[in-house]
Amino acid sequence: MTRTDIPPSWDERATLTTFLDYARATVHAKCEGLSEEDARKAPLPGSPLMTISGLVSHLRWVEYSWIQVRLLGEEEHAPWTEEDPDREMRMAVEIPLARLLEEYEAQCARYRELVAGLDLDTVAKQPIRDGRHVTLRWILHHLVEETARHNGHLDILRELADGTTGD
Image 1 (cartoon, rainbow, N blue to C red):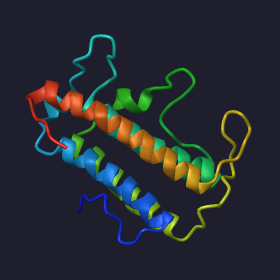
Image 2 (image 1 turned 135 degrees about the horizontal axis):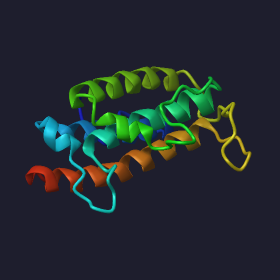
Image 3 (image 1 turned 135 degrees about the vertical axis):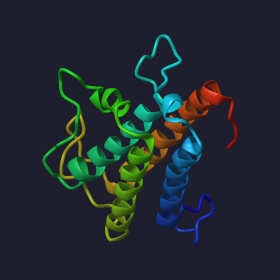
């Protein structure tokens, strides 16, 4: 996977999707060479679900929720429930990191193709909490923000796990 934040052209779609792909690729870069044990560690006492595996799973399911459920209006089949709203993070420690990363990349590839065929002004079929319907443009911006924010968490967790730092 090539990791670059320089788009092939300077139009809005190319810039936006390039930044999202860069953030997605950074998730993989942060996990490269990490042991299964370190991927499952929760080193922050106040955040027992904050693991590298958990974050990868969370990012996978966040994209699913925004693209398949909100944008496309599909029925939700995410792992979380009202009783366990963080289940995607909790269950991730039982799944090999390589599988989590493969599933995340396969899903990203699918969404990359899907988004390429939609106008950025496409309105989501499902509303957000306040009842408004966002556009694909907003969803992509949100996914850049969400993925980049969690890459910061991955930076910290990786350094705590084995001392590895980098961009």
